[in-house]
Each structure stands twice: as structure tokens, then as C-alpha cells.
Image 1: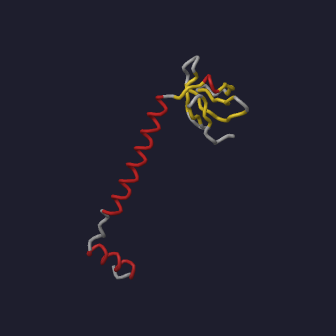
Image 2: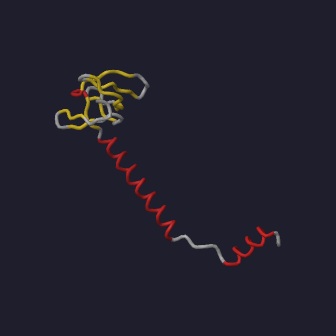
Image 3: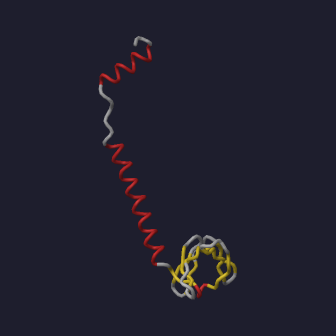
Length: 105
């Protein structure tokens, strides 16, 4: 079932998502869903199994995700603007390049 969203108490959790461990408040990353448990990676590098009811969505992770999505969209907009606003080089520059290629310079 890894990679597929799983619903627990109306909350959808997916592999790779960052959630909060309810008991300690620590952020963990969901690595894999096995039976009724998630294999979680903690910030210190250890991996432990947690049942779905022990985990909750992280508002902090959601904010980071929204910022990353906005930054990606903004980057795409600037990329398109750069293409639209591209100005060909001046005529003199094109003549100089042509002369260099022909060996006349």
C-alpha cells in the first residue's frame, strides 16, 4: 500500500509526508505503511513503527508545502516572462559575430 493515500479518522496520510507524533509532538516522516502501522523516520535518524492513531497532520509541514508550491509557481511565471520578454541582440552584434565566424575579423 505504500505510496497510496490512507485515510485514518478522516485524515489522509501519504508516504513521504511529515506528520506529528501525538504523544511527544515531534515531527516524523512517513516512510512506509505496513499492516496497521507506519514506519517513521525521526529527526535524529532512527526509524520506529507507529500506529496511525498515534500520528496527526502537521500544520507546520502544510505551511512549508504551500510555500514550496508558491515558489515553484512563481519560478514558472518568471521563466515564461523571460521567454516572452527576450529581445534579440542588436544588429551590430549580429554582424560582428558573422564576421568572426567567416574569419574576416
